[in-house]
Length: 227
Image (cartoon, rainbow, N blue to C red):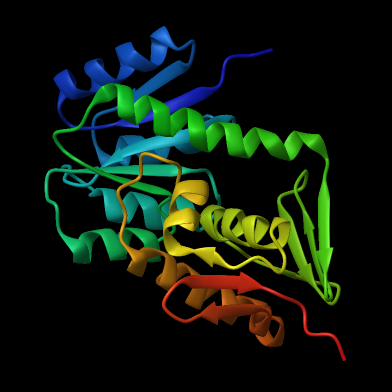
């Protein structure tokens, strides 16, 4: 099997080398870019990039703009790196479809663990499984969702969240459990992250969004209403 290819984007060569070394030891192929413009060019020159690790503060084009450019054409998983620990930055990242958000300084081992967790969930799609509930069809292999036969566009994290809900129909899920399962165990997140994603997911599902019910004081439950 070919090695999975990861694009590492950071204007600091020392940081790129640090991340690159850890990923290479785990048998990933690493491509580097030193600014935002180079990152976008490199991404579109390499059609088989499995994941992007993207710094926020960079010359020529910052990480937010890089994310916007790539998200117009691809749902490739993106991990954002930032020197600022700002809640507004984090929320902006999730609004733009970022999958993970890590503040500097960080442990390279934790970064690699998150990379592996995301790719592991992505590769589960190879099992060619599909889930159906109340007019929603979720095809893991194609990474597609249709509602009453109409395809809808979901970000990577929205797709993972809906998968988790549909796999646990009728079960009340705490926000902590959702964070641990969908954002992986070492994600020290905030409940608002989940609430933001649930709100967007409900909106995209239209009337079917009512299947995601709020369990007050706890979290959420996916349940199809029976007539």
